[in-house]
Image (cartoon, rainbow, N blue to C red; front, side, top):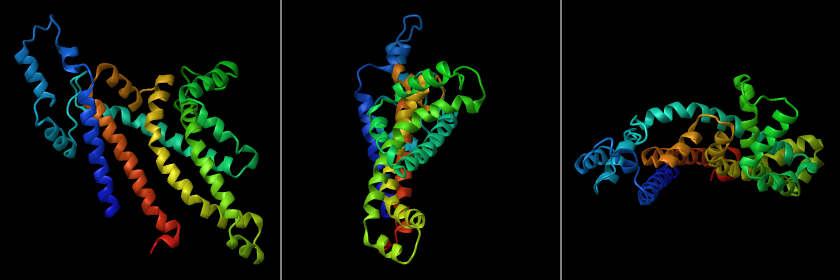
Length: 291
């Protein structure tokens, strides 16, 4: 219950900070869209439009917060449609990309951490920008080797390169923490005790060393999960995919603050939920933490 209360506090802080910062940005999306001589709108009409979008008056913050608690994210200034509908259209593609990217990142991290001659790769992966990874993969696998089509192809073929683009930078910190955890756990006295009882090297590695090295890596996996949305913005832009990333890009271009606020709060909610699950899993994985 304490962890859940902290999670709610973090969500409220994320909403408040995002609301304040978005409304402090220079420019006015409503004026950009509606202050057009051809529309012939008077200042009074613009004021009513601003009030309808919940961006006018001192009570706008409270009105917006209560709307979020009810699941009402308001209306997009750019299209005039409910923000919930725009998110519902974009979320499935991003969820598919982020889920597959995270799964592939875990597989890559485990493979790198348990293979000594691959342990230098994470330093390289961390240093490479996401957009450059995407461009490099397109050049290599699409244009040079012609293994994966850039345009056309099946749905799964179109996911291969974006998933790899998202997974490569995320797997690096997880692999680094997991590798250090393995090296540290392998030197603990309980490993010598298990070996003295006649356990094989493989049994010791996977049953005892890996389990003790998993906890720090699990924490890092929860922290890097928040980078999936940020990475999806770049990845979906590079590969021309529709999702939350493209929606965020369009909202930034048009200063569509209701959409941006909803995306930020949604990202924070996913991040907080994943880390809450990680915290609750710790006592299950490590009996020493149950007390």
